[in-house]
Length: 451
Image 1: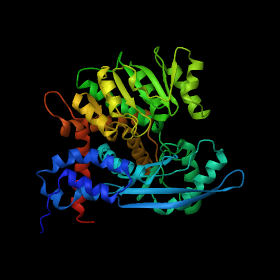
Image 2 (image 1 turned 135 degrees about the vertical axis):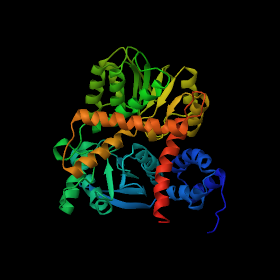
Image 3 (image 1 turned 60 degrees about the vertical axis):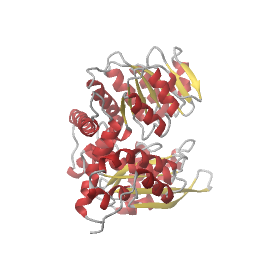
Image 4 (image 1 turned 90 degrees about the vertical axis):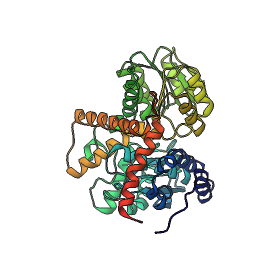
């Protein structure tokens, strides 16, 4: 057998950049994983000779397609759609669909790459994928969104299936959009199967799916604090975002005795020093989800708060922080500010919300820092449980699912400790998550041979 020359980290990343020009988000995601994996692989010849990381960093396929639809004025509109199927070594591809003008091939490749490790960490048999379109649902009528979703699924249906690739929701894609896409899939295929998750409870959905990502991020945060014999009682929290993940993270923190100070959207953030109570969280859910309003209007309903236009909340002193909005929203300087202001723990509710400088800052400061692939895996975990329920033609009760979610998040935390314990009381959760996720996928790939 030929012996493969070992390339170093810099050489590997140069190859990634060369093969993926103008794709900074994807390169960033690979770099963040590779920094830990190269050290882990140092004495493991088989991973090197079989080019395992190189293969994981090359998607199985990237499907790109045209999506034509007609707006309410009768104009023909054209968007681009994608499905990135990154790796299915441990199960069918699984990952959300995102509708947002910022969607590019680079963004979806980074998300699918991250999803591969996140899904592995859950312990459920799911591979990694992601899809979406640069379609912007904001300002569109319900009928326009329906027509777009139907056109999107008319192409996507040929690439997915319950045992092939099972998409879910993401930014811009909630229960309404999943319903439109599932209806079109059923219409085309004459097949009622668990091909999408995030479905309505009346037609195959799962209880607590809506809450799962935000709740899971807080469960993981609580697990981290427990290693220091602490809990959330009396702790102040800053949260970014005001959508599904952010509001349910806020809800769980309040339930566990913490005090939430901030929420945000693309226009800025609100700071409520009196604390964002359950009543106020319910107002945000109604205002943002059903009325499609802006977070700045919170201050009209609750005058104790202030609105800070065009800014992120990371300058507000806090005990814990949860970035729950989007990628690269927490930069290196923001991380330094959080640490300087005494932040003890960060649990990511979004995918890769912290840039590399921020990651390095948190690791250098040795605070409790959970990367999204570990801390926000609760959503896809319950999506995986929805797949199981669909296969069994049954629905589990809420208390059963809540316990399973807690157990899964605890299991991910244990895996991070197993591979991330640096001694002296410091756990590198980034390293632990990267290695635990990589090892599961890599060992499956070795078993299959060169495929």
